[in-house]
Image (cartoon, rainbow, N blue to C red; front, side):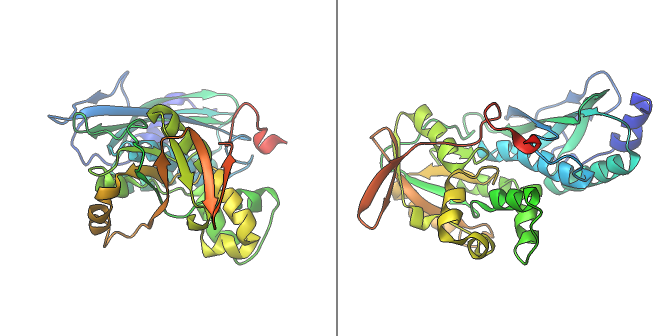
Length: 325
């Protein structure tokens, strides 16, 4: 492996941009120096991805970078935070210059796109593992939380659901076809809904990003808020690509529990719906109402006069075998 400091200097010394002007010292010292903007609070989250668990062995570096940073920034979106900077811990089995170039180039492109700056990290030898800690800003008391949903609130999601699970399936089974490029893009290139989050923040009572599946992540809101939910599966936003490939039944199943769509799920009081619709009237990300919060614990599905309970199953890193099965 190349010298750690040479590797950092060559590939990661100038990754991203600092739109907030808060980075005083970044890559190259023992610590980064960050000056929070006046009147803002710091929001911090960390994500780790492991080859064979979160992405298939041999995945190109640019695709790994897209999944890694997109997923990490999605946590900031869930709290309606403005991205500021991030650190990167990179464990490599060996120095692969081609892989590293693709990884760092794509990482830099996305960091510039989302206005974040790489300010530090670490490299070491071992199984391919990547950890990103993201930092963002919110005004005091304005961060969206999982707790806060109230009975009667409407439940909304962004984008379409189930696509990432469909993309994963095409990767695992080496499927080709007209729908595959779109679905694989949704798997490898999650788009954190940062702008959407800032638009809905004044109306939302709770929020979370969908990483483990809609049912599992919505259940985190329900438990934190001590409420329940009634969902209409017929209202689930499903892309034409997924629908045409697997049909309605499977598409609905993946929309509910597929995971890693990295869309937002949030709740809004009924009386705030018209204001929300007005704010989103020219927004280019779809926002769909899929149900409502109830005062009865648990999640039920309701469609065509029938109601039935569902278990909030989702992805669990310690019960699923990932890509090594």
